[in-house]
Length: 318
Image (cartoon, rainbow, N blue to C red; front, side):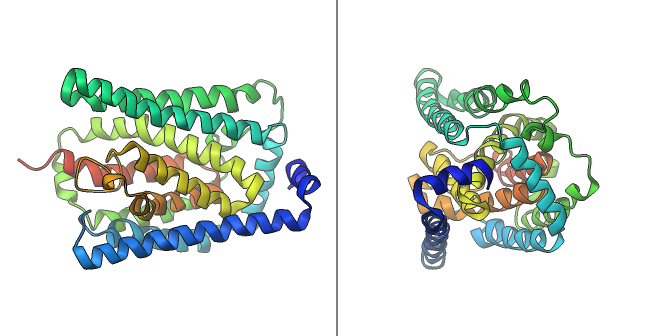
């Protein structure tokens, strides 16, 4: 783990570090298991929205996608890529940068709640205009300025995370597209695809999804937050933690933007159901990122998921 592992071990000892990491891993798994159990029970006993049922819009595509990623990712090449990522992160102060990212995430949530409420009072149904501006500001521009761009100018010949994530020249780093396409096809089979295709506003809607949701959120949650958490707590613990933060963010905002169908509010603040939907998809996004460090794959997957769920709802056939 290099410098950061050395610092942790100096403070706590190697055994304590391993215990802490295992505690985070098993604690995260327990939270996901509880969320899945509670949501599954609610679906079976009450027929609770979203529709189509969560197993077909979330759990099945994600499960198959994770299995495919584990089978098709070349272990040796993935390990070499991981070494490049850690080399790129060596000059960074991971703990301080995670603090900056936490500040940005809090600003995003508060900005969404505050500005949406203000616009709602002033302009009624125009409240949703707050989302793109606040998301781009707090999840893209400010984090890049504080965390990544500050290092790019001083990197010299050393690789940086933005370069690794965006300049994908090795063909094998596109193998993850297989899992992405299979997951998208499984999701498409469970939603109203005909309505989406017939929607004349589809190109504009897709562009808006990519620019205002997929790009900032995948760069923030996976490219920046998860990468730094992996250095501190390990791969799977970081995937789970980032997915939990991702789900909690949507639950805190209380707006339906992504996975969950139904009311205009997300799960009425139900964090466990948010974890069982947003969080589960977040595990797919996180594992995909950890295998290939190809931000384009994450953006493609995230954009397809949002489009397949939301566009048919927003533009019903007339």
